[in-house]
Length: 310
Image (cartoon, rainbow, N blue to C red; front, side, top):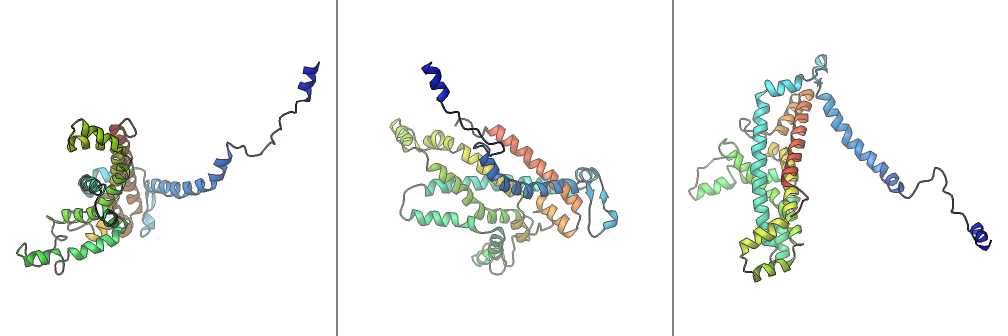
């Protein structure tokens, strides 16, 4: 009887009000406005590009506008030689640029990770080019490559080359001239990410390796490089996407010339839409570029085993 009375006197748990936000759903409700806003800014442009890629859309020739189906894609793959030329150059540009940036960025990160006098100032100088915009970088290097006041003038003064030479107007030198200009800006990106990951490598591993008689090269190969695996994979992927979409530097530095030899696919898209006003065909090219980048990114992450065991 006493036990039954105690059970009867036990207060009932409070009843939840219907319609009230539960603790589990409350965080999602709080971030929903920002999430919907970001989704709108991202989804609308992407869907618009997909829509216009199936259209003939030229504001200067409205009488020709209308549904085109896959004609823009067929034209790109079968009738437009510039599409393949710009795609091949884009692949070459990304491979050379990202590979050299990774190599020099890794070397710089290893150097500034050492202890020496003025290390903070050295790090600031190494990382400062990353804060410069692409257009400003182009302006700096246009002045450096100027045939009258730039590097070639001083080289000609010491007997190297001839006066009036412009590396940006020569099809044999313009590629490497553009590569050097973008290296100056892109190397600090790799150096920053790799240096941040180097800070987390335990010094005990290097001390144990030295006790075992491992050389500096073996320590780098078996300790440093495996630890940097994910940082290298992520940085190369991000930089490859950015370099593929590089428009500002090449447009300001070379304008895609001379003779179109430095025209990437995104630069070709910009010229097609802005100069020719053929937004339907430009949207189709953009869609192709999006699919190529998405496919290559997935394959790269799968083959590199990003996030796996080091």
